[in-house]
Length: 137
Length: 137
Length: 137
Length: 137
Image (tube, rainbow over all chains, first blue to last red; front, side):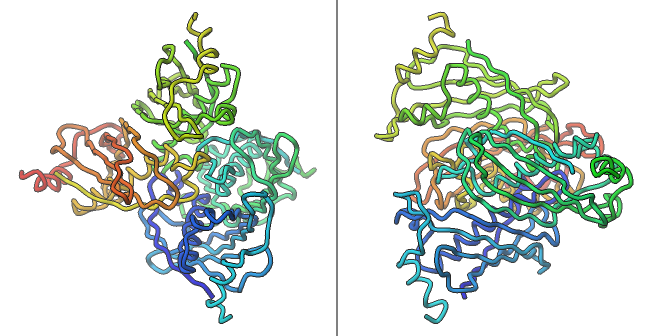
């Protein structure tokens, strides 16, 4: 399994008039979480794009349990639970506040897109190779 | 059934370096869609809050089929498919581009929160009454 | 002079916990305003990029007089007051709420960037030609 | 003088299709910078609001020298250069990338708003007292 923890502080501009971190802002927090998870593989998402692969999101689900508030320090826990097969990469999420309360859980599925053809492709070999050790392969 | 159509043009600041409307921006588009859907009931979401009810999102799912691009005019179709019961209000979504291609589908579930107590509450009578005619009740 | 009027409704996600439209959101509103102003010239900003010109912002100033609130319909008035010379294009702004109150005034200066060289360049001939009639030239 | 340094990594969702960090995102970066600057005074901006004071922005100017890119680590340097007098608090900014290149400079002016009256007020005594030692007063 791959597991990363990222701390993000809620910005004023991310709150809404309810005083909550806006429900839409977690798409960014989750994105930051998976960038950090990928850094554990030995390369940045930036490099992925440099190698000619784009990774757009195809599915995103999130369940909100409790709100986050301005200036809260959120811990985003990102997991790749299973060795990815085929053309999809799945990230699982949990967000906690500083008191350890679960704020939300979610899942984001990405695909691999060949930049030159614009077509969905299967997992690049170099990504597969980087992932294997984390799954005892 | 309640059904509304809202047109939204993709802003430059909403694109990302892939050239897509960022996957996180649809949370805002969907929010605009349900505000318009609620306006069909004879009041704005602003008034809902004035009456002491907040409606935070508890579940949000979205499946992306095709990207939207800068300056595209998106049609957000928002539906309340069933007369809401209990403590949840469910909105279903479809987004299309100007060529009529389906961009994404999604679902957002809201709860009612009593502003004075901060607690989840059941659907307010006045909201129930406004909804009924749309479901032949 | 070129002058355009654009109406924008404040989204929930654009408010902050003060209940104001976040001070940072006007960068987007102004951007929408200048896109509409350029459409009056007979082409979209999208086409400008297709013709190989990027137009990044080099200066941005804004003075806030009054806040906008959720669901307010804002009128963004965008002006090009003088025939642009050299390598800069200046847009002047005023935002009003539905009661006609002045919310803020601002100014955004753009430069022309040749996409192929990445260098600042002078105003393209075709843009100059499109602008001239508005300044009696 | 008060001076703080904050590091912020550019998120994917903050880029635009030019590949730049969107010009509008610096309003958030600057906000994060001044929150950190205020923390040096011994309290958070969150506490300022709890004490009944809101601090909306009344003026914001920024000059862009160079763009930031996705995943860049930006250093935001925030300064209060002079002991604030009257009803305004001025923050000066410089943003640098990891290579030490100056990305932009800016200035943000805030006022104090009494939450209970909704009126602009002069600097609260406790804020003045917290600021004094930094200016040798």
